[in-house]
Amino acid sequence: MQTKTQRSRPDQSEPAAPATPLGTRERIVRTASRLMQRQGYDGTGIKQISTEAGATLGSMYHFFPGGKQELAVAAIRHGDAEFVDILGAVLAAEPDPGAAIRALTRSLAEGLRASDWIDGCPVTATALGTAAGLPDIQAAAAEAFAHWREAVLAKLIEAGLAETDARELAHTVISTLEGAELAAQVTRSEEPLLLAGTHLTRLIDTYPRTADAG
Amino acid sequence: MQTKTQRSRPDQSEPAAPATPLGTRERIVRTASRLMQRQGYDGTGIKQISTEAGATLGSMYHFFPGGKQELAVAAIRHGDAEFVDILGAVLAAEPDPGAAIRALTRSLAEGLRASDWIDGCPVTATALGTAAGLPDIQAAAAEAFAHWREAVLAKLIEAGLAETDARELAHTVISTLEGAELAAQVTRSEEPLLLAGTHLTRLIDTYPRTADAG
DNA sequence: CGCTGGATAGAGCGTTCATTCTAGTCCGGG
DNA sequence: CCCGGACTAGAATGAACGCTCTATCCAGCG
Image (cartoon, rainbow over all chains, first blue to last red; front, side, top):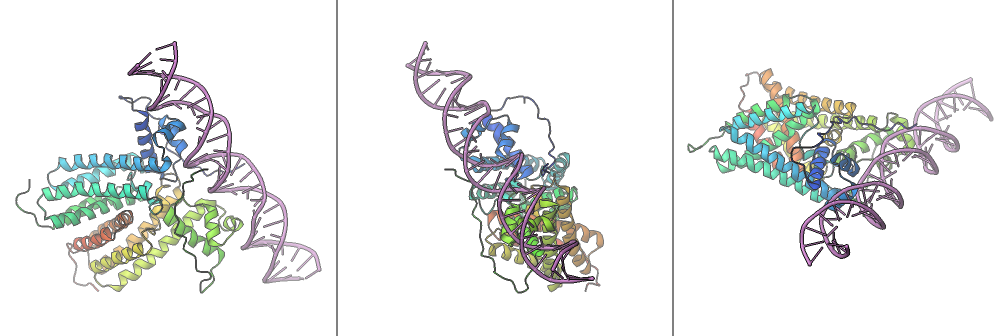
């Protein structure tokens, strides 16, 4: 007998039919995004995606003639847009940028714990193993980072920070969130994320603000 | 014909014979660590490791009867120890912890650029796609993070920070470095790392220190 | 000399991979 | 009623996967 390498998959029994029945293409993209977020690019097979999405191989290559690479790019863009929405919502709910970012880390920590530490950043896992070799995927990931940075930048400027300060801070805010989510995932603890929130707030508060903050 | 997914591999012609000829086991571990750092766990095959290490399949399973998983754990531990050395050396070269961490980010940025942005964190890529399913690998990665945090913690305490402050800061320093390295890799730019260095220094400088700093 | 056991060597196992291919189904417009 | 394109369906393909297996080599020792 052959001792096959097996990896326990949290086979969450999928909800049979969502409220609005999604189109096949949309179902494929969402499934691909979720699976690659958890298992990475190389760890996720086309067959697995098609099965879990309830689509057939024919459909996969009908909608994504570019194959796995094109599918991965779509998955990253989906994760990108999804997180832009979260980012926008959470940042808008708090006027002070520091408080908003702390709320964001709390939200991320909750989500991570709720998924038993498997749903990390939707872009990182997909992009990491392939960064050097698959330029389309790397470019899509870079765009995602840029979008998120812009959301943070807007919040900091709105709060009255100088443009240069805000632009530089936005970089570090995203880097730190990314790294803290990673650390939280690996150590299976909310601590890295919560501390990142506290420290980022403290850092932001060292910068001067103009009076015309909304 | 079949358009196989091909990923350009930077086939650096390996130095034929190092000064001290390494044992087979050591050669396997180093090769595995380097390859998994670049391609991740799933993206790296046993055959590829054996070929590039100049070992045969028989040797692979002779030294690592636990198969790919055991090999990955050894690779992570190798990367862990390697980075502990770098961390220790760079931190020791500068008395001020902020300056030391800025030097570290410069060093990391250099290394990343020198490798054409493919040699990121030696632990992240291996651990990411597998965190949920392969507990041994996840545990080894968590230990690596803990070791690095301890090195930073020691430096901060040595500089006179309060223990609680230092412990919390060490978390965020590692998170931010990790995230900045990731961002730098994905965006192919040194900027995230250099900004992280600047901001971490600024953050550390907001904490009080006792006078007895060495 | 023969024995022993660590190390090397690689053919071959069954499985899974990404992809291609041919057919078949569905459905609105003429 | 039929046509054409969008979409579904899944068998087939060759390569690569992790791993097992038997065989060989060789240093150390009686």
